[in-house]
Image (cartoon, rainbow, N blue to C red; front, top):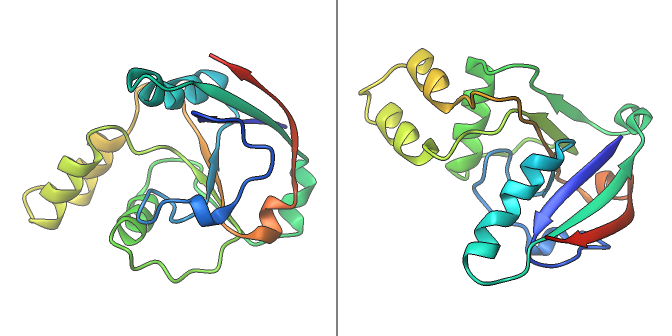
Length: 156
């Protein structure tokens, strides 16, 4: 499978030390099999006057058998609970890879409404879903990253 990462620089060798904390699936290197999604991820850098670079990787899906994987096939209460745990900095799970849908740009408002008890989980999930297909695959350990093979990059 081909995976993409949108950034302001080419990333030949992903390094978890540069990963942000408290994001959807926790600290890790985020990729997507959807080129247009990586292009969108580059947009925030381009808007700031930086380069937009999409790095491309090969990932053999048989590697899923070598690592501990958490896969969310749809938006569910379990998906939302995991995102809330990660975004609040309370994730202590040991997954090498977590894959599933992206919480949309309204996530901060939605999470606040949920934490404040103003909406229930079902409403939160509805608000967090993108209307068009999306997918993120987060490589959370060096073991998982070793399964990615850099193939090249392009400037946007």
